[in-house]
Image 1: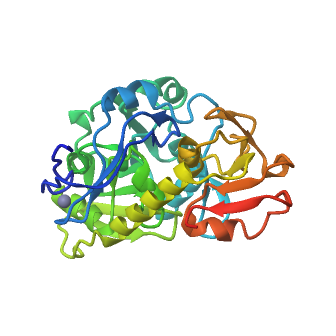
Image 2: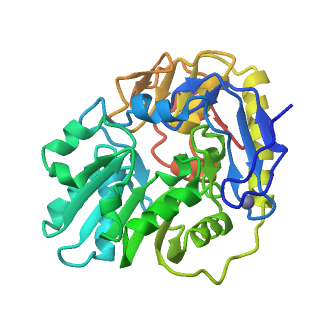
Image 3: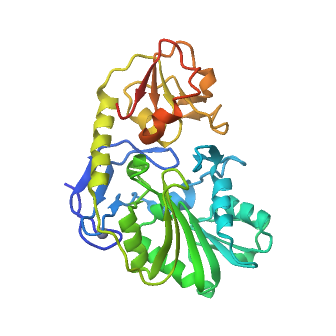
Length: 374
Ligand SMILES: [Zn+2]
């Protein structure tokens, strides 16, 4: 029996889970936790959401140390041209393209180590950097280059109301329990002509997002606009091409007028496909040894559900190579053991075949490639 849940965007009760899997579940930092993976869909505004984690505040305060333990660690992403780029560099490039005004005060909300903001300010030393996060883990990283008066943790200070020409939030809003309240708080801190730039996963373009248990929000275009509208913000641009699998949004204070009708069918179709895939991973007997191509979120989902422990992960990210992930080593694809019989492709199914159509000379002759979408 599942407790009734209200939509995080519009408050409508969404009593029945559209997806309910016993777990184990994966977090966005690729840790396995023993909670069910559930997704609820709101028929009123089209929002897809997952339940709060058992101890959400503690998770971000003390556990969510993304990229913190390894200096220079970064995530590889694909830009519009299909090239692999490091995430913070690309985020900085997107913000710089919008050309914040000379001398602008720029706040990075949910900044983490604030590597993106640091890159922005290196390119634009005239900008005044401010940072905020819900953890003090990052203070030592900020201290070297941001004045203390321009740092804040846990709550956006009253004095920051109306201050910012520019607020950025890179992959933050998908994590929050009450996105409308956060948007309202960000609107409070924006100057009258200020702009909010943010990225959130696009669960339609990257369906694995629906299974990320600490992504409490899986925004659709409609639910994104509904959430902004409730906070007195209007999107001036929503781009789904710029950053693979994400919405890149620019918004400003104002009234929304053109909210598309909600449609939960794409999310439901993705969830049904995932239910089938997870069943296949659990029940199908694959020839061993098994390698998983991709040590990111998709690869981790596979490893957590497979009946056999994989021999290794294969991944092109140099920061992951050489590590042990979920008890298996991460190797460069060229180091794939010659006796591997099955390679399960742990990549976004919408892009997997294209990505593996080249650079496949490393695949052992007898090995079979298994794609998640069959
Ligand atoms: Zn709703």
